[in-house]
Amino acid sequence: MRLSTVRLHDERGTAAARQEGDELVLLPYSDVGELLSSGDDWPERATAEDGDRVSLSTASLAPVVPHPNKIVCLGLNYATHIKEMGRATPAHPTLFAKYDGSLVGPHDDVHIPPVSDDLDWEAELGVVIGHRARHVSPDQALSHVAGYTVVNDVTVRDWQHRTREFLSGKTFEATTPVGPSLVTPDELPRGASGLTISCLVDGTTMQKSNTADLLFDVATIIAYVSTIITLLPGDLIATGTPGGVGAGRDPKVFLRPGQELVTVVEGIGELRNTVVKDRL
Image 1 (cartoon, rainbow, N blue to C red):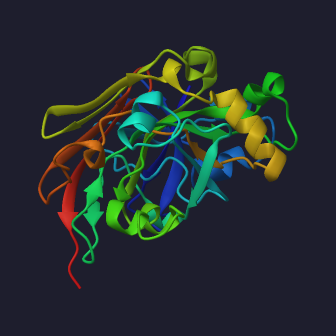
Image 2: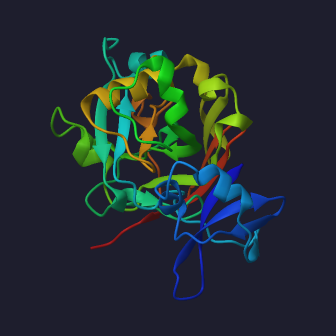
Image 3: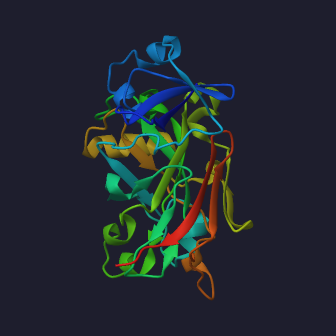
């Protein structure tokens, strides 16, 4: 099953939707996050509900979960990225957070903030939590996954590197596309492993790797984070990026206004975003 959050042209604002062929069936929930939070039987209801239909080709899609309770991100989780950034291989997952104001839809503009020109790409596999998780083991962890999505953890590099903490460069508003859908685990390999992941800028491949190369896999990440804090339905985990980022190149390369950023995870979908420059 594939679920999306669709923008509507009425007072409802948005609605969760189930994809059926080239149509989206609107569900009686304001977004996918509300659906996931509505009870552990959400998969059955999402499958059974019927509603108005909109064309997938013309629908305006919001971030798949527009307002997650938590956005937990991993840094340094592919060996190629660790090497290009000149960092030691971590013994434990490197965690940081984002806020929901950073999220944009799969076809929305990505914004370069007026205070920087160092906007960088980071293609990532996204994990959406479907059932409350606290102190779960790696063996149990995947049962708490609602599904998988595509994320680009677009980063303002000079602000990221102002301090040892990543947050300031990672959560600028309107920088992080997510979507186009949540794809349930039954449609993918276990733990979404073995999927090709890539990022293109104006048609040139900048990143290409495979989710089997994650240093810490999805089950390990969920178990680790659930030891620290309770994961709730709708929470988003961005699992880290492979090598090929702009800051890892010599000379460094950053996104410029008008460029098209395309992020693809095999079997899940693609993000296609235009880069724009904000002005004060």
